[in-house]
Length: 106
Length: 119
Image (cartoon, rainbow over all chains, first blue to last red):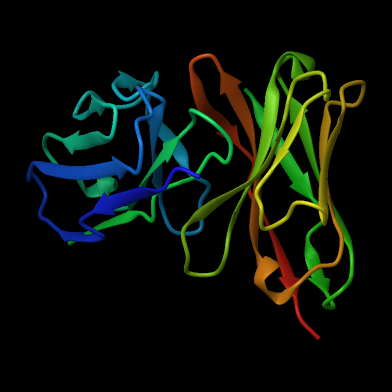
């Protein structure tokens, strides 16, 4: 099975900060990676798919990059509504595992 | 507006069974693969199971294989998760989601339903 790690697991930031979250896969997954945002008590929402494609309706301050085994999610200027937990997920083969999550807090 | 409306959660004793349902609206259900994801209290997301648009292909996490069964009724726009031999570690919020297979990601999600396995 392919394992995903995320770093950092917790990130303390301020409004306006540039934030970068890294996701690493235990083996190559091409660009079959998605990023989700989850707020407390809510279902996750997709931000990025295919490693770098922004989902419709997602603000352009979110961006994704990478391929193979290393990927990043960047928030160019953190907004109050961005404080949440972020998960990466690979979708190259079953099981479709998620990373452990990165909590972005004040 | 696409909606996935979930039902069927609740409290069940260890070893018991429960069936979750997820009713889809505002999209052609039979054209889309579907999936279940769960989240234990205070923990991260765990993929549970997926099913192809026709229902002909099903896939499971090792943690639930042999105990859970995913199915769908395309005539009723409904996705199911039959959960048998439930364990305490199955306690979680369960989400259904629309699975876009090309490119690959989970798009619309249900509201989640809590399953608690406890005596």
